Image 1 (cartoon, rainbow, N blue to C red):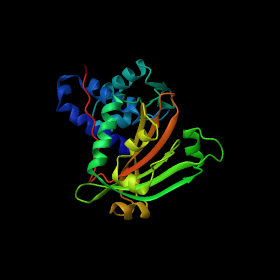
Image 2 (cartoon, one colour):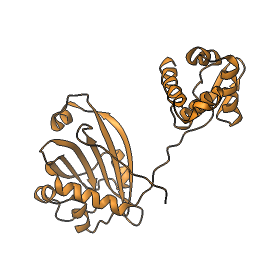
Image 3 (cartoon, helix red, strand yellow):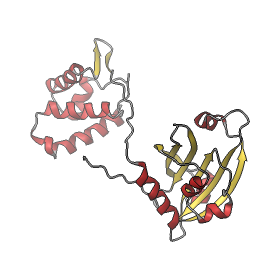
Image 4 (cartoon, rainbow, N blue to C red):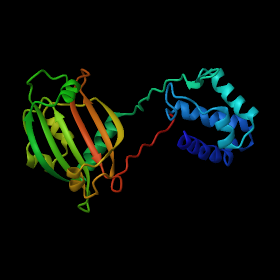
Length: 257
């Protein structure tokens, strides 16, 4: 709880030096607490800080702490129980950001054509159970698995990829994968991706992957799982990428049309 309160205190201090500087203190506190609930920082069913904890942590009066909590309760973000404290009733559900696929695919092709690729292995085998579920593959169905490392123009490895693809019939050789964008090879096999779902997270580098990316074991890496679908909605390609954040950044530019 102390770590959470310290983080929230920092957020409040930032708010007090920004656009919220002139709004009442209770509303500043309410806004910081609300944002933490809405983005999942304070999870569903978690116990909220007590009024006394808010008073001590934020150096506010009891009236200010109580009013901020009352505002959260009035919006059904928390439920307050006498003798049991307050708990979060809002359930955070991540909402995917949607964007055009065409530009993304062309960016992937452009990036691949400026990278150097080293294929570690190409196999055709039965995937593990979790990949079978994602690909909706039948028991015993063989799927192409490719493990590769991408390096930038300076020869520095920045990405470790493991991909699983169904429907490959030709041109998936080491030479081809090291000289041509994988998206183009998919198209040559009649696999035209029309939709992708990406999930970004973080993962610590195992000793094997650390050695491939030139980082220390345990280094935090950007993790991306990309599910590629065709027009029917079927997932035909699962790609797991691990990126060295010192050599790769994932940037998004969003605008209101």
